[in-house]
Length: 257
Image (cartoon, rainbow, N blue to C red):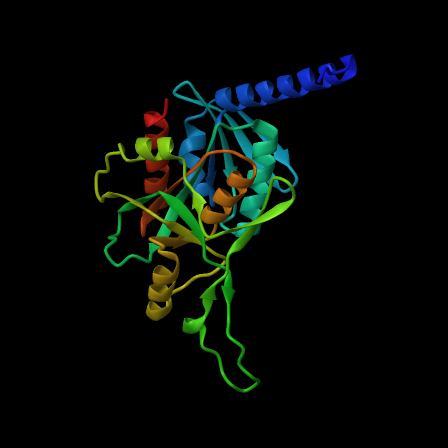
């Protein structure tokens, strides 16, 4: 089949657009997402040539650290805010990688304070489905089943998804981080707009989703990155401090190419 000149031009334009997008992504900054100012402040202090931009309700810090381009965003630790801020940053700055970092509470009983969970994959454990129980029949939350996220994929199809993958290359770099205290543990950060402190419920979530730890946003950021085609990695300090989380993020950046 021979294409007409207008169609040839259209094909060439689309190919050029794809190549430009790939080039922007490969040379783009690393996007660091954290919930609070306290977790971001040590990175902001190290920015060379810092620039601050505001978009909608969110603020973005741009610059470089040790010669590597970065964008920093504050997500407020809430899934909706985190997805909105991450989407704005990805569409505006075309990052090569998203790094969600911060603190977390352990689900895996083998984890100790100071350990750092680096993501093999992420679980958004807010999806649950209950059995039918009539009025005044009570509630049995530990019998609920896992409800998958239905991600929009190519061709306007819905793809049921249990977990969001982490970038294997970034995971390999994260495993090289050396901690003054604690261990680097490859695992499954989980997130939901919940604060779970009931031991039986934590054990149930750990069993159903295989979660290593819990925070308010990491899996939702990972899902957003997957939908927009950007690699992602998670770094979560168990029962640590904001400064420790920032130190781990800076160590990851040092290990990055």
